[in-house]
Image (cartoon, rainbow, N blue to C red; front, side, top):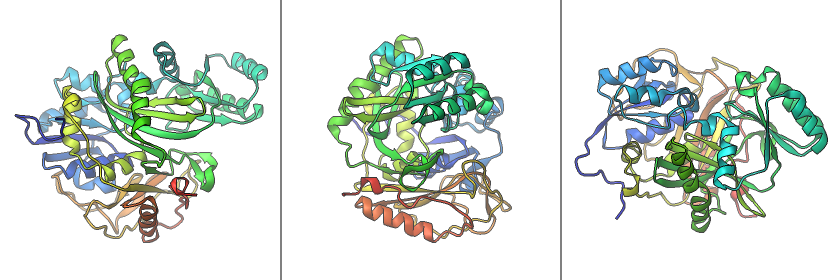
Length: 446
């Protein structure tokens, strides 16, 4: 019988978590709850992870690997896509270090939209029709001929902001000019123009070990800045899960038509995929189709998943790194969870930094959490990274970027989870904060 109990011979682990956002605070929060977490380090973290932080930059792969060797780290977990696409896994494996995540070649599933779309076409995975362009004149001529609506995407990494749903030709042209005109740097040297699809969008996650894909939970992100999906795209203003429309038959369909064929195609291409496969889906009248792949946990979906997950995260991630996910199974808490993102004034065009943020104490029952993202802690000491260290709240915490907090709660129903999350929001002192008031409302009965 599959399980998340430690396999024979497994011991407690020293873990290094790489990242500094809300996703990483949620992962650290869950990892620290495991009885198998002997010691936890977070590089470089934020104010919420101050109890475990080490001051090493995310792109200092040699420094991170040296630290892992010095501290006897048993498993490294990478949160953001940047280090994965830049080859941190390859660096660690070359040093004999165990790490969970895809190597540089496999991370192209997120690092290059063109690579991902070509793989989907080759593997027969349902997705939108598309064309790839590296010449501005050619793409503009194509748009003039085919018109709108279309989706215009930067080929490379763009922090979740490189896709534009253009409902008019003018919007499509503007998107091309911005992307290929330097707005996204090297990520915008090529663009992918896709067929516009209509339907419910959903994020679906699998843990992968190169051969086995273990399905996690689905969640719905809220990309637009304002209520009712108005305003500009952001990195994500909140999430909830599981969606009411998600069911076992749909999960099985996605596993058979998308997740498993993706793993087979990557293995056949000589780049077995190890890590988190994040499948962005749209449920169209013609059936589910893939919008995009990501190669890591989502943000803010991870905040929802970690509050809902009942299984031991340490054992799951270790099994992914060891190639034994076929021996694992999952358990989830009943009910629903909601995460409301509180962002700085001016986000997403800019952010107001240095604003004091005061978070009241949250009961340590696993039902609620305020996950820090763009925060800094000015002053004080940490406890050297021992698991179980508390979240730093109150005086000394200031905003340091756009998305600052992920206020998360679990409830017996979606309505209860929303109520608990927004009650937490109301208790937080964060002058000028902006947040949506409708996170999760699309999942409520009409």
